[in-house]
Amino acid sequence: MTSLFDLSPFVSAAMKDGRPVVALETTLVTHGLPHPDGVRAAAELEAEVVAAGAVPATIGVLDGRVRVGLSAAELQRLATEPGTAKLNLSNLAAQVASGRPGSTTVAATLAVAGAIGLRVFATGGIGGVHRGAAESGDVSADLQALRDFEVAVVCAGAKAMLDLPRTVEMLETLGVPVFGVGTDEFPAFYRRTSGLKVDQRFDDIASLARAVETHWRLGLATGVVVANPIPAAEEMPLEVYEGAMSQALAEAATRGVRGRAVTPFLLERLRAASEGRSVFSNLALLRHNARVAAALAGAMARRPGPAARA
Ligand code: PSU
Ligand code: MN
Image 1 (spheres, protein in one colour):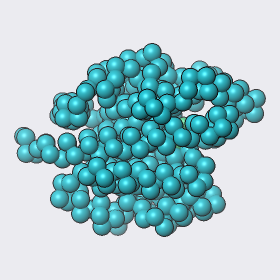
Image 2 (image 1 turned 30 degrees about the vertical axis):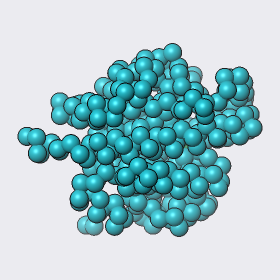
Image 3 (image 1 turned 90 degrees about the horizontal axis):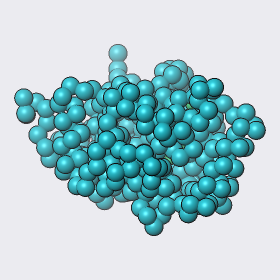
């Protein structure tokens, strides 16, 4: 049987040569940002990764295959074809088997990266425990995927409309380290701080790379959260953030939004309630995460792999 994974020539050459590669997801393109901001963001993220000396591997599902290293035309298809599905671990297989298009969430991107051996992934914010989860049961599959796949995810923390204390608690339960980049605090996506602590702060990328690799050399085969706060100049102003957030959460509750629709709904309502300010911050933190991920992948590529050390 042929592999379901279809690597672009750039990605497979880089992996063969041991050059740094950064995995990128596509749900933020199709469901997280309004069109055409999503496609534009994807191109910008790839450019940041390239400028920082790594190869971007944007992941999505097209024509019954998992494509790793989507072209601009393929990204356009994902963003514009009606019915592109938001894929996590539970609906990935059915979508691939059907031949219909799908964009990968953090969970599905982790699964793909883990399966083909990519170790560094950049996104905006991971999913987590939703507010009111005790009643709705809504906990993102991103957390399960972080437990199951050996990939470091560079993110600006978890999306701010989540229950952040319970999300951080769950990461600890799952044995997933949370490493801060120049911060002691778990970032709150649009804001640099949340009042919650990271497991360890790192002020240089080489030490961060060493700690990530140490986790895996200890045989702890989970993901690692690399928490990289949004640059201060691009944070959402506190009043805008708090006002927009409570408005978005209230609307979701009134409308009874459920399941996979919750996160895209909240992101869209936040955009409207903040008059686009949330999208500005979202794009800024994404670019920042892409740069740090490329630097981390570079530092890891320069260190001898597990075989060389054994
Ligand atoms: N971060 C963003 N925008 C997004 C997402 C994350 O800046 O759109 C997406 C990611 O793909 C993440 C998903 O995996 O939202 C989580 O959705 P859920 O809460 O339904 O698991
Ligand atoms: Mn959910």
